[in-house]
Every structure is written in structure tokens, then in C-alpha cells.
Length: 275
Image (cartoon, rainbow, N blue to C red):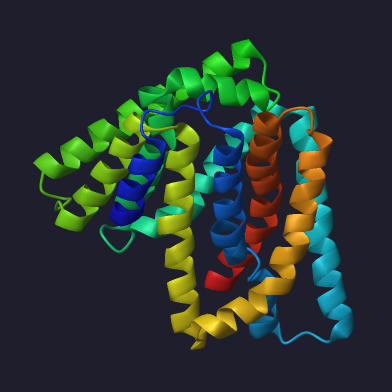
């Protein structure tokens, strides 16, 4: 996280989405496709390892996954504000796993809220612009920004009380990682901040745990995920074509609405597999 944050600061220093060049947007897109998407592309392999399905069951799983993702995608277009709230809620629950190495479950949940709500505090103008690009009205975008700010303040108070009462022990690497992420948010773009967190912490943590659990080498990991990465990129290209009038809105929709659509079935599978 620290190394990638520093590298991203050098490349995107003081650049908001308005300052990105055409190629800057494509650098972010390629990073997302090749480093972020593959961890969801392991879902079929995860299902097969836990259930050992026959051909019919495997086909039904894939069809069910596609149906859920398609319904979530259409739901966002119909109710974007509600879907954004759901997206944040399930992301908080999902991302809490990233911090459980440092602290117990309740505080790891607070850290996930801290990370996801930080853009509403430190880059609220840019975050509001993104929300409006994702089909939220200006009034709803402003309400959600205020909700993010309130959530950020509440978890800061909870973490501060926990530190004062010595229920949460500050870990040097934890503090350093959070400092690197917030510095990245303050010096670059919300989009860069999100991608660095999603790619360098969340996805990499998932790859490492997956390889440890199923005793896979990095080459085997690539082999089992590649077919689904290709299919997902075709889906992403379709989304980009749908919003093709603007590279900014096309990339944003591909990343966030597409990610929301795929996160719901991914989370259902992962949470069931953890039980």
C-alpha cells in the first residue's frame, strides 16, 4: 500500500479527474482491469472447490451469477441513490476483512467506514461530481456527502475513545498504511485513492489468502482467473460503449456501476464460503 501510494502520488500529484489526460484515464482503467477484476474472477473456482458441482450445477451457478449482476446493474439505473447506499454498506462489511489482521471485528468495521467515507470529507467536491456522473441528482449527492461526513466523524470518535481506553492498540504498519492512503487522497484524485486501496490492499490481500487456503502458485492463480477476466473485460467494454460519449463517465460507470453489479454475487459467494 505504502509503495503503490508513493508511486501514484508521483504520477498523479495534484491531479483531479478534470486534470487527467486521455491516457491517464486509460492507465487507471488498465490497472483496474488487470489487478482489481481478477480477484472476483476467482469466484467460479471458489464455488467449484467448495461444492464440486457437476456440469449442470456449474452452468446454473454461472447463469445465476449473471442474472444477479444484471439485476443489480439495472437497479442502479433505476434507483442510483439507494444502490449507492447499498454499495457502501456491503463494501464496508466486505472490506472489514482487510483490517482484521490489525484489530478485532468491531474496530475493523470502523476502519472500513473510515476509508470509504474519507472522500466525502477530504475531497467532497470531486466526490459529488462523481456521484452526479453516476446518475444521482445533485440534491441526493449532497445528502450522501453529508452522510459520509457524519459517518467519518462518528467512527473517528469511536476509534479515539477506543485508543484512550486502550481497547485498541495502535499498530505502526496500520497507522502508516492509513497515513499513506489519506496522503494519496489529499494530493491526487478520489479515483486514484480508491483504485490504490482496492488494488494494493483489498485485492492483493485476497490473492494471498486464496493462494494460502488452496495452496496455489501465482501462475495457477492466473490460469484459473484469466477466462473470467476476459469475459468481465468484454462486459466492461460494453459498459464503456454504452457511455461512450465521454471517457470520464464511461470509465467511471464501468468501474463503479459495473463493480456494484459484480460485488453483490461475489459477496454472497464469499460470505457463504467463509461460514
